[in-house]
Amino acid sequence: MIFEETKLNDAYLIRPERLEDSRGFFARAWCRKEFKQHGLCADLAQCNIAYNAKQGTLRGMHYQKKPHQEVKIVRCTAGAILDLIIDIRPESPTYRQWLGIELSAENRAMLYVPQGFAHGYLTLVDGAEIFYQVSEFYTPEVEHGIRWNDPLFRIDWPVSEDLIISAKDNSWPDWKP
Image 1: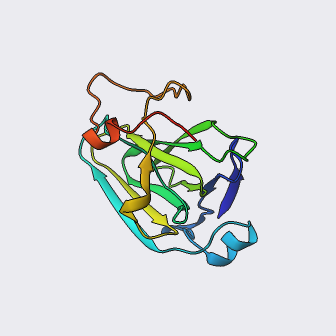
Image 2 (image 1 turned 90 degrees about the horizontal axis):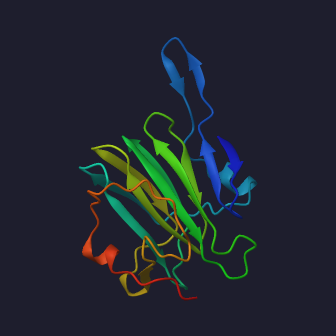
């Protein structure tokens, strides 16, 4: 695996290191040893799949509060998404900054989302499927979110007029630390 630092502190883009031959290729998508060597959380509690039928589906911006903060490793296994994270750790040098990265079945990249980040995504095509691993079990009583278009962050979403978003995600409040 190839670990690339992003502009946000502690967040990584992880690309498969392909071993190719006439049959195709082989690549490792997860290795506890390699994650630990990079100082990243290597503990997983569950793996989730989200399927989105339509382009323009927005999910986010989600996070879990302490003591159940999650690390997420996000990969798009079908289609393409704009995966977006916001650093909401007041002590971080990249506090209140955001990053958007295209993840797709074609590029096979993953985004490592540290604890203390809000996460969401926008589907760029119909039939997008996302597979993500998390370090904590889903705990509804500490689930929280930030409104996807909170003016504080000035996120540059490539939003269409036909945005599909749940009532719950559309009603998250603006950020208040």
